[in-house]
Length: 510
Image 1 (cartoon, one colour):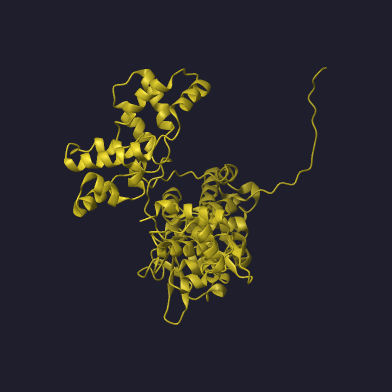
Image 2 (image 1 turned 60 degrees about the horizontal axis):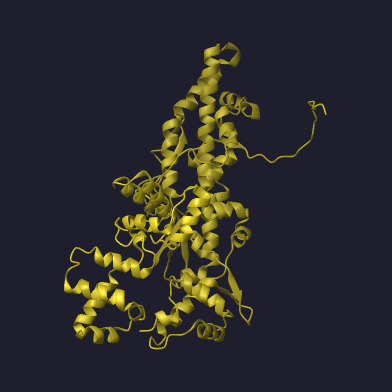
């Protein structure tokens, strides 16, 4: 069948974000530290944008305070010029207004803005706040320092990639041998992998590459500098030959078998507790997310009469304005008339107008970010007022979803999601990520909504108050929570217990 090219027409409705909307979305997503860097870069790139040195209150705290939710009308009536932007059209000279109005159609938008709009939500800056190298990279670095054959490096690389976040190898070597043959086309045996794993277990930190907790602790004891001492030998015997008694904390039985005094048994227990059951955590998370310094985006304060104020931390973000020299240049060029301009003068005017528009758009995007963030934070404080009023009692948290904040602020759910992502709030009782306040809940028999965090707080309280000689089972914990009006099943209790890092009942026995 012959092929031919056919040209057709179709009418299609597509929603496209304007360059200004794209800029506002990007700035809204940025945490404070990244916004500071973004503003610095914009000040360097755009000569029409400059720091407003005569900003009111610059000697005061770098925060925008709305008091006790009394600033809504003031924000609605903001004059753009008050924040360093261009004056409104009514206040422009006729020459400047005409020059700027020549540059208001979509065709006049500079190419760099349309390119940013079409490039999607990816940010041009690559901010890295962590100096921590990932656990995987550190293990590969140690491998490169060892004298290994090419085959050993290939097998060891696969073993390193199979370690979990704790630095342990949970898979069986026979299963890994099969995976290598199927996915990598490398034929090997469990015995060969055993030899390579033995070399991997010589890496730092001690215990890495172990296949279970017992082997992990043994590796650490055998690599201790004083491994020949009596204390280390006792540790070795306890973990190697009395591991079941050790995990169940039967120290009386261990002391009798080793003929230890109460003081010696207590010291032995303290030393064994110093061993790390998760050696991979000592080198950062396996995904390579290192610790970073958190800068709170908001400050929530309460007074003696129960009122609360929400402040937006501006950090190192200065007040911005359009450069008066650029405005004067536009006014001077416009006063001559476009007809009297040469090609070079018209090109200079076009360039100047682009820079001014870009500066004005950036200033407005920063202002819009502040308004949106304050509205979202005020809504969160209002919805979670019992939590803030109680001084951080988790049991006072209410179930809250993004749509609840969106309904209160009139914003879209996606906008609320961007506003809370990566943002933190500082209170008198701790610093919290905004996403921490969101969570599902359950309905009690009386129709009251109970948040998951409140249930978890009650679960932690029950476990802390239990008799350690007879710890409560998940079934018993579920019954006690139900009697408190929190209808949860045993499987739900088990899930929340694991999320809180609480071991099963037999491991809590003291």
